[in-house]
Each structure stands twice: as structure tokens, then as C-alpha cells.
Image (tube, rainbow, N blue to C red):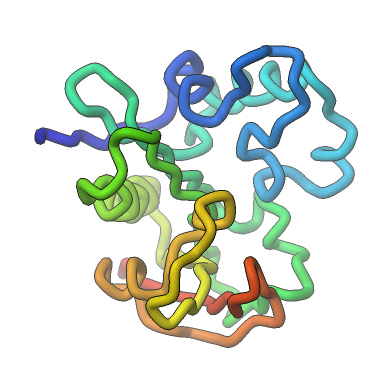
Length: 190
């Protein structure tokens, strides 16, 4: 398997990974953390897709995509923390004043799971942040202690996934997802 991770600047590929089957459906589009809560809740149906289309055209785009050949098989949302709702999130602390980037969603298409794509996505997110001058990158995975995480909640990743990518625990959080505490994991890129 030759997985290649590239910037998420092709809207159709992002839509295939995080968009709804029906364009008028009111789903996340991976905007819940990318926008402020007020912006996110103000967007409905087709407006959510139009917003993602606009973000794909920006520099930097909203994340990275894993491709198996020409097929998009995975997504990771990664962007400067200052441009996300993590900038003001009371449950996820700020470690310091570094202009850190955040990776908050890792999603692999059904039929492609269990082949290491989430590892490639996280590595790709790190390289993407580094190539845009990020001094550090953070993630906020669950500390599941090896227990199974419900697939609908697995998008944040696990502590062990981040550890294998070189991240270290930087802080505790008061955030809980699927009954598991979330931890702040960080990798310095300098």
C-alpha cells in the first residue's frame, strides 16, 4: 500500500471524507472545532459545505488527506490553534504562549481501517504544520488505556497513537469523550 498524504486543497476529496451523502444534511464537516461555536452553530445544511469549500481554497487549507493512489482514504484536520475553537476552550488548557498548531480529527474511511492510515495521517499533519512554520503541534486524544473507543468518538485519536508519533503528554484536561479523559499531547517542531 502506497499511502501519500497531501494538503486538503481539493474540495471534492474533503467532501468524500467528511461531507454528508446528501448536500442538504446538517452534519459536522469537521467544522465543530475549526470555527468558533457561534460561527459553527450559525451554519446550516449547504452553507457548511460552502464554508469548507472556501477553507480548502485558503493557504493553509484545513487539513491533510491520505490517498491510496488517487483515492482519498483518510482525513486529518490541522490548523493553527489560534484559528480554532481551542483558542478559547476552557477544558483544554494552554501550555504556554507558543503559536502552536492543533490536530483534532483523524478519520479513516471504512474498508481502509487497520492498515496504518491514521499513523500516516498524523505524520502528515506534523509535516504539514512544520512546512508552514509551526513551532509545535498539539493533539487532544483520549487516554483510553487500551480499551476500545466507540468509532463515532475515535476521531480525536488515542494517547498511544500520538505517543507513537513522538508526542508527549504536556497537560491534563478537564475534557472527557466517550467516558475517557482527554490529554493534551504535544510535539515540539523546532
